[in-house]
Length: 333
Image (cartoon, rainbow, N blue to C red; front, side):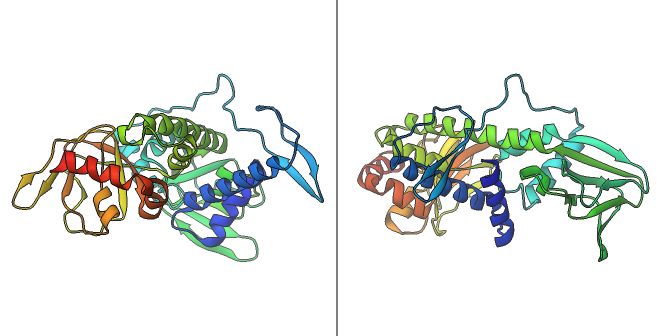
């Protein structure tokens, strides 16, 4: 699985994607599907939890990857931080290309795992060719980033991140980073990142499946559809008073409330339905009919939703069109 993860990361880098985790997720999902199809053609069974093995399949070699498990006793590190430090890290991760597509709860866990590290002027924070072990976010000071044969290629200041490739796959450092002044940086070790990200995603997948089954309108869909839907959901947080959708806008997403409460209003009328809470859904009307948004949905308090894009909604929930239309009419008329 480590090799496939590296391949997925390289694919995201090559495409220069604005949503690298979507690229990585799609790559690994396709890999898992291909593996399942290959296993259907072979009578050998690999017990869950066994180490990866290679077996001949025709003229090819099949690789069966072991499921990632969090080691017994391992817990993510938690380093104390001031409110301003926590805010800086959250803001930096939310704008970082590698991390901005993570679920807010993932970034919260990663924030706690960052450790403050200080460097003196002239210190080499990273040396080109060394094995990668830490990812850094620069808090204060200035660093020079240089590459052998090219010299200095950029200056790093507050908020700049470097060393990210080490988080996802083992690769030699591609540049040298030198402190040009006293520097304060936040370091995140690769193991913590992998364990938090992958372990958390496994836990979220299980939680999403359980949650989907608790949504009344979705309780009878097949286990296969539940699993596929769980892998397609994106977690989004909204602060109190934020408009999640606005009346008259194009509709491209379907939402299920995971936590919090929202209200649905129409211009000149006010609230048009009961308040919606955990397990309720909204946004389906514009997707079912291709009309504009029929109402504005506003967070009453901090809200976490699970979002599904239009094409995924149509593919996975299209057969429920009539049922969902009736349910929507009952709650929003």
